[in-house]
Amino acid sequence: MRRVTMETLRRMAEELPGLPWPDAELEGLVAPRFGVITGFPEFLAEVEALDRIDLGAAGLPAPPGRKPKPAR
Image 1 (cartoon, rainbow, N blue to C red):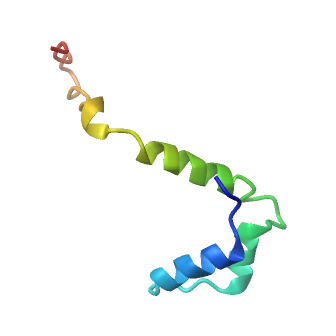
Image 2: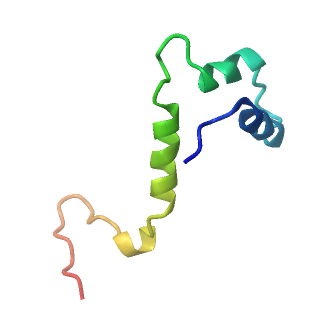
């Protein structure tokens, strides 16, 4: 995954116009000054990995108190 850039975040903000993102907040995602969100690129990588999972193949969990049905 490529590093997050200010240009990318500005384009995302344009696509989601209902959420105002001041440049100072976007800059905090690109180059964190306080160390609070240093894992932002890792978070995006995890979201990307989750997006590749076929949730239909994962199946649903059994309701509480019931044993799951054996796989066929």
